[in-house]
Image (cartoon, rainbow, N blue to C red; front, side, top):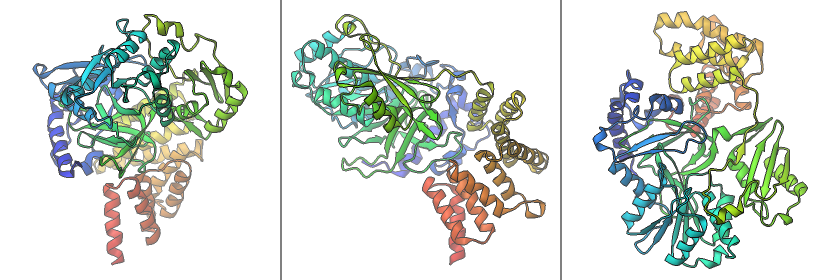
Length: 582
């Protein structure tokens, strides 16, 4: 059944009444009148960042009494401090319900082998609840343990007639390779198997098709995290549908201040509408996603979601930006697809290590040419020696798997200015403009000739001016204008500095140097150089209104609404323009 707007509005009100029970949100939402917030107003509330969750600690965003807690979970923490979450019994049931919407359509005659790790991680327990709720039986063959090595899991699958496997995508690949080493053909030797469910790792379409070829059954993906539980599930048509009764998924620009256009890549901000124990508001989880409305023949109404990977894995070479999804699509499109692989970022391109039991079919030179063409960056290829990427002997012995590193980033020299800018932007996103201002000022102390630092400092002053009284506006405006001028003196072509200059020219009275025509040129320059969000189009529209160019103003506001349909200022301007036409 489609989720109604009224149901989502009610759930948002319930969430906003629950959040102040946690120490984090009690402080974070102080001064906000949340009783007046509707779905269309959610962008007026602050983002929640990973840094804030780490600072809050395990109990910092617990929103229910300890007596109501049923389970505690942590991520592996292999790439930093672990992510944590708390669950009531109701939360576990909600997570199970989310998974039951998967296109695998679990039934009482299914026997599901759960290969997700049971130690601390979340997916095994949600899958277990989903099975129990449908009457399906489970075989708890946890991964990454000496209790259930690969040969034993394969023996269990065959002897018990397992119909569904659920686990990490990598576990599905390793099980298939172990079966091959045992003289089996996975797509023929497990006739009871009808489907595979995966979660916990990035799964591009090419990787999903590869696993389907290995096992001869459909693969269904599930997208979520330890902090949020399951956000989207894949239907029978291969579409990841957002569970809109349980989540609001925003897709934002890198600074978190604006929405991107429907279907465009951006940074996810997740609001958990149904989670009780450790709810989250606009959680900026550092994942790159795209979300778009989707009329699907499966009958599910949730928007489609594409996951492109973590922001930490995003690589930029000149004008080419690569996400982990792009790399996966290229690697798994090779013939043969590799049994194991690793990409090493270099200063001007990529070095790719590949392993396959069919590696004699590869030529390092030809594969390098293919990958260079697909990824649009220079790629060198090395066929790895046996055991470097994959310990095949270990697959047949009692050796548990470990979390692989698929992308190894280039070890650049530490840049204190970049670290301060990143910290300042994170504070800016969370609504702490005074803290952001301090971080940007510290970046300028380290290098006063950095245009980006001055432009971001101007942005922080701009937000403080918006929120301040008349006395504060008079005091801060000259500082804002000076930072814009300084940024442009250092780098007159910097897009963000040009945008800030456009804001200065637009919002300053013409008698004091404002110029909407020049402001429009600055905004057009910013758009042409990669800054594309609803607020920027609104500002361009405001310029055209001041210049009396109604048709161009209308086009700009329409562009803003395509990127963010609920943008309040854009809607007001649209109504004003339509009234003028009447």
